[in-house]
Length: 75
Image (cartoon, rainbow, N blue to C red; front, top):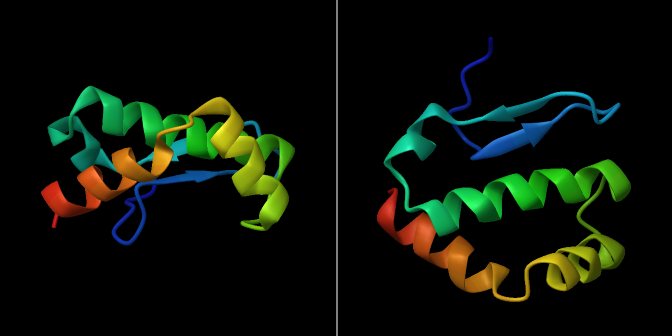
C-alpha cells in the first residue's frame, strides 16, 4: 500500500494495478468516476499527450467539469 498525497490516482506501468487516493471517499461519485476512467485510459495511453486526452474525451465527454469540481472541493 502506498499513500498518494499529490495525486488522485495512479496506474501501474503494466496496467495491472490502480491506486486511488483515500481522500476520494469524501468526493462526489461523479468525481470518483472521473479519476477511475482517467486512470483506465492510461492502460491504452500511458502519457498525457493528445491521444490520451482524445481517449478521455471519448470515454467521458464532461471530464473537465468533473476534474474542476474535484479540485475545487478537495483542496
